[in-house]
Image 1 (cartoon, one colour):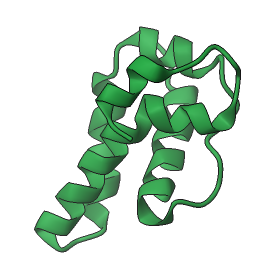
Image 2 (cartoon, helix red, strand yellow):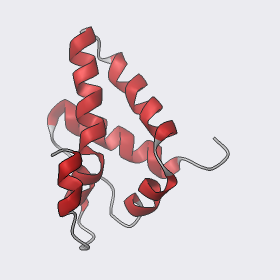
Image 3 (tube, helix red, strand yellow):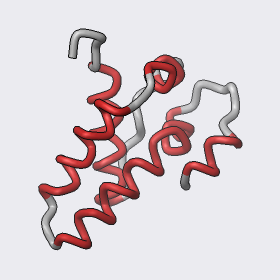
Length: 92
């Protein structure tokens, strides 16, 4: 599950496909947490990622259901990133 996985995104609106869209960002946030031995770093990384994401990512993401449950800490970060991107507006 990484940026390379996005190439295999299929057009079926399946929640598990959200992992292909956001997996790389969530894994990067988790790596930052582990490197700093601090779980709050992941949330900060997610926030920065949201503000750097092109609007086309948000557009594609909104075509799919919300990220599914499970997946441990990376899954939590995927869901955090998913929710934040879906609520992101042009005024932010």
